[in-house]
Amino acid sequence: MNSFIENVNFFEGNDPEKIAQEYGTPLYVYNENILRNRMDAVAKVITKYPYTANYSVKANTNIHILKLALEEGNNCDAMSVGEIQMLLKAGFPKERIFFVPNNVSAEEMQFAIDHGIMTSCDSLQQLELYGSLNKGGKVAVRINPGVGAGHHEKVITGGKKTKFGISEEFIPQIFEIAAKYNLTIAGINQHIGSLFMDPQPYLDAVTNILRIALQFKDLEFIDFGGGYGIPYHKLDDEKDFPMEDFKKRLEPILDDFVVKYGRAPLFKSEPGRFCVAEGSVILGRVHAVKHNNGKTFAGTDIGMNVLVRPSMYDSWHDIEVIREGKVVSRDSLMEQTVTGNICESGDLLAKDRPLPEMKRGDLACVLDTGAYGWSMCSTYNSRPRPAEVLICKDGSVKVIRRRETIEDLMRLF
Ligand SMILES: *Cc1c(COP(=O)(O)O)cnc(C)c1O
Image 1: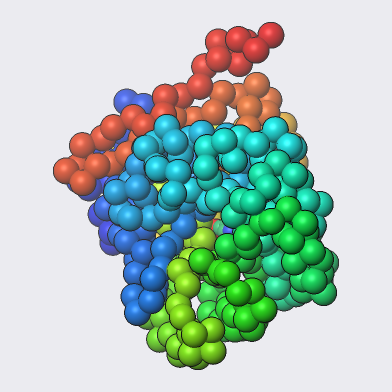
Image 2: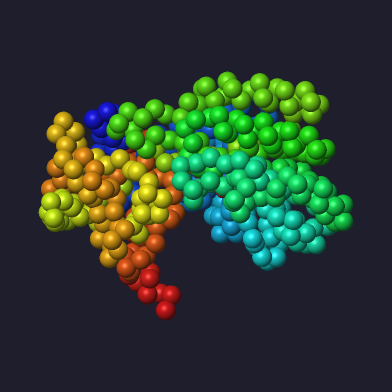
């Protein structure tokens, strides 16, 4: 496709150049309609049995986006006490928060217990700790599914080499610890990894955890994890995650389990990226173009502190070029390397990428930045973190996080 932002009318009639001038660059711009649409889609993955989609908030913790998830009927997964506090502040009742941490202190676990928030223990020692803090309580355990999937070694979270969960061979010890502290194992959860476009590994992992679930008698819920992908190569016509096909193939697996288990517990999934990634772009300014040793470098203000995924995971983000408010056509492309303004050679947004020729003063519009974008921002090179604006359903533009200032950074000294 020539342009995603034109196809979906991302700016809802607003001029991106005006938005950039008014709020400054680099700037995260969100689209409320797209965010709501994806959150609604995940809430309907299972309709035949009791089900909730738990939005995994580490992908994006902006409180205004959490409120959208609340309204769209998503529950949420928190990875830390900070994320729990964000969710409480956004208005989530404790029943709609699931704490899925790893390697937490007694104080952190106590916080969840004091707030009545269901917690999943990621190791036998964490389960032991939980038991000692909350005798007679209800708890979940995270199972390491023994298999994983994902776009990069760093985001595969299931499998024999990863740090997450308790492997199946230790299930007898789970029961021993539960008996010792009179705990009820009310849930089991897993997560195989992030960003798969083929549903099969996930379906296999569902089958696997349902087999394991038969050993647990008191389950109130079984949580299959997240990881549904989104097309990061959409300008090259990459297809969406096949949600309808996935749903069709998931149902008979659940049917089979419900017969064997004798009842249907609550099923859960934990999508993060799918809910928010496509609902945001970053607008950045091209400040300098140069030609070094036969290579063209377009230098922008979108450094690795603003979007770390390309340098951290070699991730691909499509880039559109906007000149005077209009998307530049992709009819004629030239190879360019798009960089940020951070003093690191790894500060690259795109390497040797065929793109419309970028000129000083253009806007670079980086697509699919709503997940693991702002939430992974840093202040490296003493660069304050960017502002976030939301294009609301009615087309109005609302600041949902102000730009950080140097004073904000100084305040800590
Ligand atoms: C990060 C994470 C998720 C969400 O993964 P996505 O790829 O963003 O869907 C779900 N569950 C757990 C335990 C996670 O750590």
